[in-house]
Image (cartoon, rainbow, N blue to C red; front, top):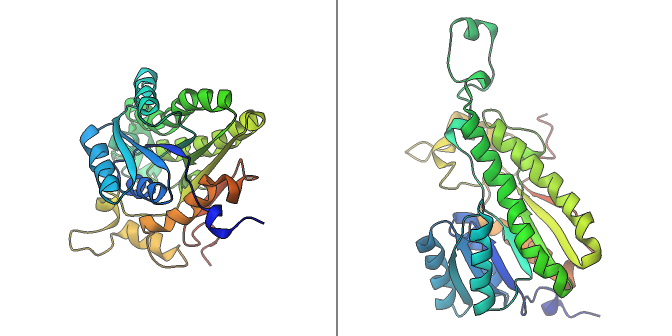
Length: 284
């Protein structure tokens, strides 16, 4: 029988966390370190990555900050080499980098014939292909490429663990964000595909699907300057049975469970909602 403490002990794990300088992924990096993992905090901005790593070290954990562009395979390989020289081979990959782009977003939730005839801007027809491409690539290729770089060494060494980050919009697309929604749906699908593809190598692949969390990227969309909810924010809370936004800490229990081979060793190919009941609620 496995002792409870060992179920969630991550000693021996070497984690690479993309998007580690952000609000949600920095909390993930801290939590992994608290459970004993050595953590490489990876971010496009080195100063953001190193700031989080410094906090982890100050709390007694082991961490380094690494500059990394998840859309550049050579950058990922260089980051991998830095981590291997410092800690050894990565056996836990957290694909947290992602986001949206204004040019991949519509201003209108829906469009009518009358609006089209009046040449009202901000519909599907005004989307910029470059903005759509950037958003899709950041979320989907920004998950696929790190898997290519790190799963290769995991497979050759006998196993490892990948945790991707999907979204509620993967289940039912949110208005205004077609590129982001499509990309996150692709992440969920890819998570299941890769879990099957890598199963015989000992690599597990799962994903978190957060509900609505306030971050630097969406704060202006969901809250007014005085802290009250925008119309869109109000819609979200009205469809969330727990009637609040998620806190970064709400992700950590599921993260640590999936990261632990003792606790979740037979779990692969799952996409787990962490959403306050949003997905379960029909609206009535």
